[in-house]
Picture 1 (spheres, rainbow, N blue to C red):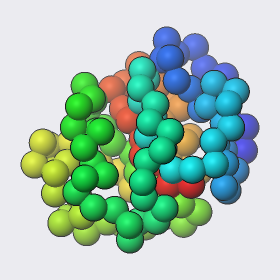
Picture 2 (cartoon, rainbow, N blue to C red):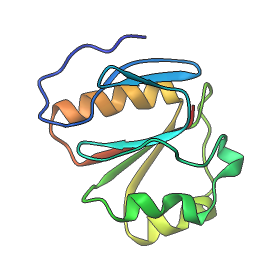
Picture 3 (cartoon, rainbow, N blue to C red):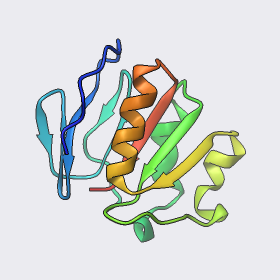
Length: 122
């Protein structure tokens, strides 16, 4: 799925996604990652929703964001509240969806210059 070019001032933009790979700023990544307007972590540990633990959320806690998108892989999955406890304590708004949907949503929100980050399980 190719994503339309936007006029965002974000440093990091998603160009395309297909199962198993994501293209950001014309570079292809084949592992889970975290993206925000000005930060990119290209080796985020979880390979599935079941892998997530409290330490995986730490990069998000350092970002000036309001919304966290979690791309859960090819299928949309909902996390239990205890899996998101560090984020909920900081009052982040967390949305879980398929990674494809998270890429589209991230692109739309970044185009509006919203304060968003996405954790994308590839």
